[in-house]
Structure formats: C-alpha cells, structure tokens
Image 1 (cartoon, one colour):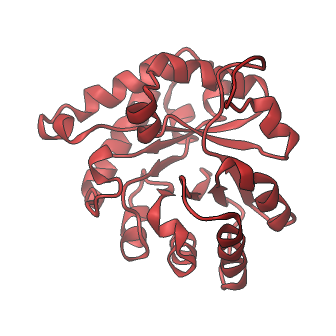
Image 2 (cartoon, rainbow, N blue to C red; image 1 turned 90 degrees about the horizontal axis):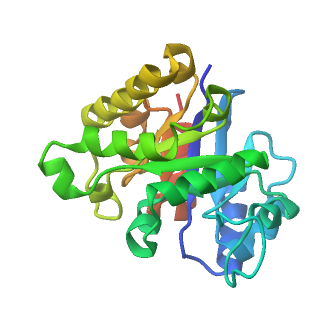
Amino acid sequence: MRKQIAAANWKMNLTLQQGEQLLNDIIAKPHSLAANQLAIFAVPFPYLPMAVQKLSGKQNVFIAAQNCSNKKSGAYTGEISVEILKSVGIQWVVLGHSERREYFNETNQLLAEKLDICLANQMKPIFCCGEPLSIREANAQNEFVAKQLEESLYHLSAEQLQEIVIAYEPIWAIGTGKTASSAQAQEIHAFIRSSIAGKYGKTVADNISILYGGSVKASNAVELFSQPDVDGGLVGGASLIADEFVAIINALQ
C-alpha cells in the first residue's frame, strides 16, 4: 500500500518561537495517522533540532530539511550537507522545489546529484517537479515534467526510485490562490505514474507516492486526495495555520 503523506513546507517563514508554538498547536488538535499515513514538516535549517525534539516519539511524524548540498563536505560556505542533516536526526529532505529551480538556478542535473548523495546516505527525498504557466497554456506540461523525471530520476535503479516521494507542483498554482482542478491533478499524476511504469514497470510505479503541491488547503484537500493517483499534498501557506494543516492531515484517504 502506498504511503499517504501530508507534508508541510514552511519555506522562509516564522521565527523559532512562532514555529515552536505552531507545532504545539498542531500537536494539541485532534488528528490521527493510519499505518500508511505520514505527516512531514519541512522547517528552516535552524529549527530542525527543535522540531525533532518536539515531535520525538510521535508515530509516523517526521521532520524534513528544505534542501541539501550535492557535495559531501568541504569549503562550501552556507551549504548544508546530508551528513550534517543526519547528525541532527533528519531522515527526509525536499529537493527541486520550483523556488529552488527558479531563484537559485537548480538544474535537473544538479538535482540528480543531490538525489544520488541522499540515497547513498539513506536520506529520503521528496522530489519536486512541475511546469510554469506558459508551458501549461501551451499544453506541453507532460513533455516538460517527463524531461524533469528523465534527467533527474531515471538513472536510478528501481530499488532506489522506490525510496523517493514525488511531489507534482504546478508552478502557476503556488502561492497564487489558483489550484489545479482535481481532474487536472489526477491527469498529470496518472501521467507521471505511467511514465515511471514505462521505465520501471507497473509494480514499481504503483508503489511510489505522488503528492500534489499547489495552494492545497483544508477546503480542497479532501477532493484532491480522493483522486486515485494523488497520494497527499506538499503544503505551503496552509501549513503555517494549525487548524488548516490538521484538517489537511485528516483529509488523507
């Protein structure tokens, strides 16, 4: 059974004290996770130890970094290695978010290197892919996403690929208030799964969780997550509001 995942991406928001309070508020609200369901919190680097300690012992709850370096160690001022993340108890990392691609020029090849170093060190990646508005308007989203998958993921073995969670994020729907309809989300999630099946076989494809990321909120989570190929969400703004994110957790199928 595929994992159903509600992943919070705090991005560059909240002070340490605000982040701690948000986690306290989420913990205090009624929510439950079935055996195949996970809640993941991708918090800013300085908050990782706090979040690990705060959520220690919570079943099926994990902390993720929002990025990592493609280098093992060395003179890379300002970068964070997988080894450093592991040393503070981190098991998950978000890679290739559209903001990293757009603002920091992260390429498919660079992300392939980051995936390799994560997998070599038993770090679980949430790999983001998705198209800008111009590509969607040209109805070329399938080709665009397929290239991202091929250039970053398809050098991996089937065993390695199954350690990865994929997050499809239509760039035109991130922080804009626009959301892909549930039918649009299902269509491209099914395409992603069929692309993986074409390379690795249906059994592998059916085991990979694919999340939707693009203005997910409590009001649309149930409908989005009810789609057969949508396995949860990578949540931005709504993850900063305790009531919203708890409702999203509870919307997991």
